[in-house]
Amino acid sequence: MIARDLQKPQHLLLTMAFLMSFGFGTWQVLLNNFVIERANFSGVEIGILQSLREVPGFLAFTAVFILIFIREQRFALTALLFTFIGIAMTGFFPSAVGLYITTVVMSTGFHYFETINKSLTLQWLEKKDTPEFMGRALAYKSVASLTAYGLIWVAMGQLDVDFVWMYALVGGLGVFITLGVWAHFKSFGQHAIQHKKIILRKRYWLYYAMVFLSGARRQIFVVFAGFMMVEKFGYSVADISMLFIVNYVFNFLFARRIGALIGKFGERRMLILEYSGLIFVFLGYAFVQHAELAAALYIIDHLFFALSIAITTYFQKIADDSDIAATASVSFTINHIAAVVIPALLGVVWIYSHTLVFMVGAVFAFMSLLLSLLIPNDPDRGNETLFFKLGVSPLRAE
Image (cartoon, rainbow, N blue to C red; front, top):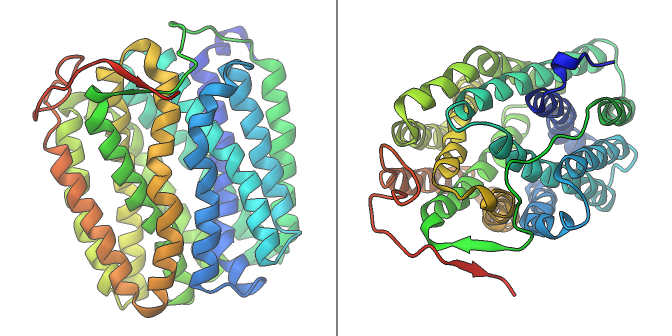
């Protein structure tokens, strides 16, 4: 049984974050090798698969309606179960259609979980504690991913375990542990009653814009940076696993400190640093010719990702407490508007020019940099941007 001193919402959030990262990390690190070796994917098919993976993210706004019938904590755990079920099924369907279906199942759970987990984090934590906690959560996610990648490296690299059983083992184990977590943690309350409708506020416009570009930019990294490692430089499953292990060792060592730095120096400065660095990272991807340099860029890119929690803490500072759940749902949809289109579109471009795909990423990073310059040093309600103030009345979807 979980001891009483562990019956805190922070511990539930960290436990769920660990489980999700363990499962999704397994799915992600195996994906490129699995689709190339077993399903004969080209850039077109992987682009379509990744676009389909983002459809549930685009539909994340529907979470606010599901909350009419189920509490957020139960919703998060249910979504976690769906994620692991999708992972367990993946290896049994090594075809384009089969992978499209299992990916959508996994992704539905993943995106609903991330939406609700973000909402619960902002509701359960004090504003002053949020940046450091989110950094701590990233460290937990890194440990989970390291565990997954280490398991894959040993099981597949050393013991020759097949893709089918690797996916089934992790998925089944995840379902079992999630049910245990559900049974042991009590139900935690919420500080404010959340809106059960779609709400868009004009004064959140800068947050919406940054979230949109973040989704577009991250898709290029998630889909094509890893795919380049396998297709262009011939990385094996063991190589990719080791690369991910290095990534998450860095995250484990530095993520909590990065969260503390965001709390100390503010969202504006840290986002300017992130986007300035990402411009050069994407330009590096565009012209890299050596596998070792590509790996270095991949690690740097992943480390910069930890700074993106500043977008979330910026929103927490400017948001009404009762807006958090509804806006978390809407923001995931905004984040995935470009994500649904970009993988399929750039998958076609990829066939003709790898360089052009990453140049597009550099443009997105530059646009994000311009937006970050509009964040005040001390954002708050009524002090959302350095540009101009818009009205605060909500726009409600009928």
